[in-house]
Each structure stands twice: as C-alpha cells, then as structure tokens.
Length: 132
Image (cartoon, rainbow, N blue to C red; front, side, top):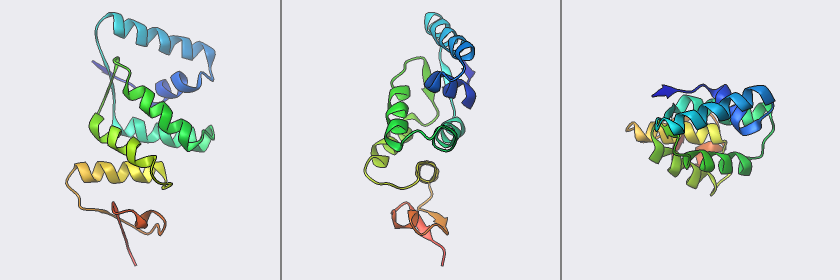
C-alpha cells in the first residue's frame, strides 16, 4: 500500500491540471486492477478541506459531498474511516468550520473530552470548550 499526498486528491477532485489529473486517474485505475489500496491520512483530509475551501472557494456542501464520495471509493483507505463518516454526517448539521470539526472529531477519537479553543463560534459545539 502507498499513501497519497493532498495534491493527488486535489488533482482528482478539481482536475485543474489536465496532465496531472490524467496521471491520478491512471494511478487509481492501476491500483484497482492490482487489487491494492491507497492510504489517505487524516492530515491529507484536513489539508484537502483547507485547500478546497481557501484556494478553490468550493462550497461547504460540495466539500462534504466530495468527502462522502471519496469515502466510498474502494481504492482509497482512510485513516480512521468511521471517524470521517461521523465527521461528514455531523458537519451537515451545523455551520462550524470543517477543519475545526475534523480536529475535534480526531481528538475525541483519541480519548479527549473536548478541544480547548479561543474561537467563540465553534465553542458552542459540545466538542469544544472556550478558553475565557
């Protein structure tokens, strides 16, 4: 198994560089033919969300839909897949920053009761605790 970098997911999702997007599609198809898988770490997911939002101005709904579609791809194995499924489900129910929510879900999966923050908006979530 090989891991993939954020730019691989971004090329796949955005196809903003045709030559690189074709290479990614070919890698995915070859990996599938070989009955192998590619690992997507939580850090890559976090960075992908940030890039799609900040650089490409992709809407929250489109980001969540893309994440849902990626989670269904048999060629991709996600670090903490069940955490990501829960994250995408819960993210549809609020308007907190997606990166913050992923950080909180990751912390919860690692046994934390909450994430301390100075961010007043996100601190309204039960996953966070406001530092006053």
